[in-house]
Length: 151
Image 1 (cartoon, one colour):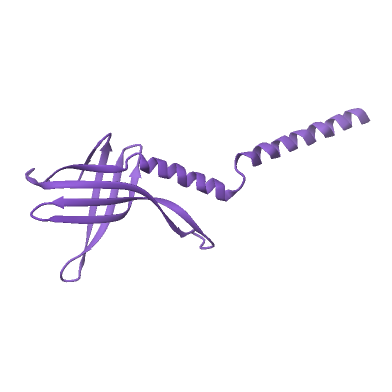
Image 2 (cartoon, one colour):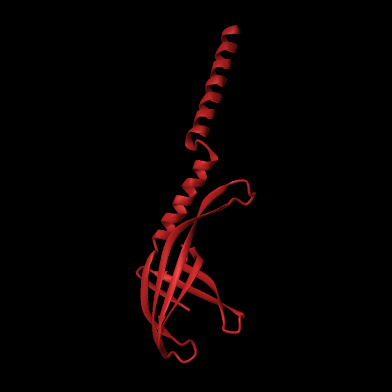
């Protein structure tokens, strides 16, 4: 009986130790896990980074309004965690749109979102008018391989 109890104690101890090692072996701590997630998201955003150019057309008439160039760039920015206790990096997608009409006009969107399953990119920027009021500009498009189709 004592032999069985010793065997059972060793088996349970071995099982507990192996469970502890496998659960701790995957990620050493929460910071490394968060860093890995940031790198994964950055890689996803890098997959669409680049410059897309083409013709801008009116939604109403379909008439050409001029040439446009859209640059998507993956980046990281340091910011406070939601609980405000520390600073950590978070990935973001910067969007730069240059419209070549009668003169060149460039808009910079600081933080765009990208839905990889649909290929959808969404950006917003606020532009100040001459009368000091602001106007919200939305850019929505879909990335298909090397092309960007949007509005």
